[in-house]
Length: 423
Image (cartoon, rainbow, N blue to C red; front, top):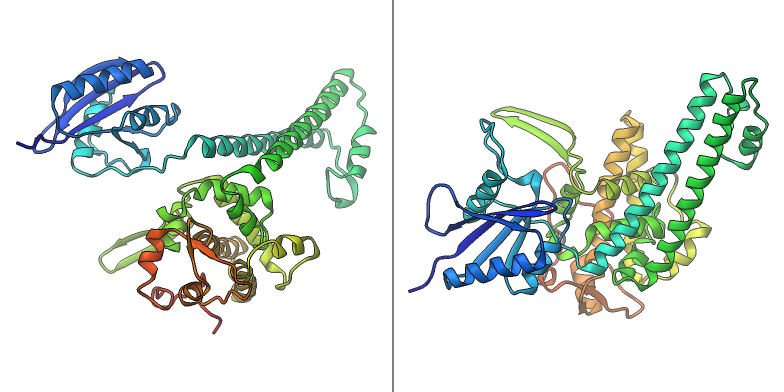
């Protein structure tokens, strides 16, 4: 007789793991299984006990959180199925007012039994290390911004304003800062300490950025980073941040899925005949979304390949180059059209960033694992590769796209700019 599948919910903390178990076919709450230390030996002991209790398959799950992916990697290494759950997508009862570790573990087990949980993508150790370095650089940039704002606020409180409405933090501005003096010695100390804080934070930012630039060429996603650099507004640092957010492109079936993952699609509140479209959802990776928003500002200028961009464009294959130029011509035109209609600047920039995410997804699709011929690329993407470059794509996406000879239709009244030809 086939044994039922057991679903194990785990509430993971720094020192302990609270476990609850339920089985397929059961109804009601899960059974508490105990509290175990958050160590590899304790997890191995837990798996051994569960295997001795029955021969059916076991499926573990726990919420993504500050404890990282160590539990997932340990269980996967032992051959067990483990899901890391997205906390924001867990169904919750509005009337519940009691929250304990045992209740959380039991709730995860029951929801996993019902198939109501959403898994997050778990990166490998090397990818997670690069993501940590990218986040360290982002933290250093924020520290520079905070130190500069504190210094500017201190000067403004004492009516010290950089004259001429000129650009701050240039060489001339730093000379002006060095010339500032205060009658009170204590205030002079505050000024000097604030200037030193800015200098130290800038040195740390530059140091971490140099480490990141040195590590990118040896990264497994370096081909994707190099191809994304062909897009206007994206340099190697911004491209690395987007590549870290994308990870495996095959987990996004379409460009709108990738846009929704970055939180760049409008929120909606529809009930009956009433339909309300609100601001973007702002879900997902805030760093990747910020990179796209900053890149979208560059499309307010006419389409052209600047001198500093020539090397990056020449280093990519013809298919990627065609997509990058298609992005420029379309988004620059869209920027002018929306501005001419009187749209707010932040609305225009957000819309351009959302469409730019579609082009990023398109480039990620042809920088994947499966090698396909130029003819298939021309059929699927409408982009001819004249250099004989073999474009890569994941097997799942190739299987899904091989049945259609043109891009998918957009919603009525809208266009899908990612892969369509110019009208």
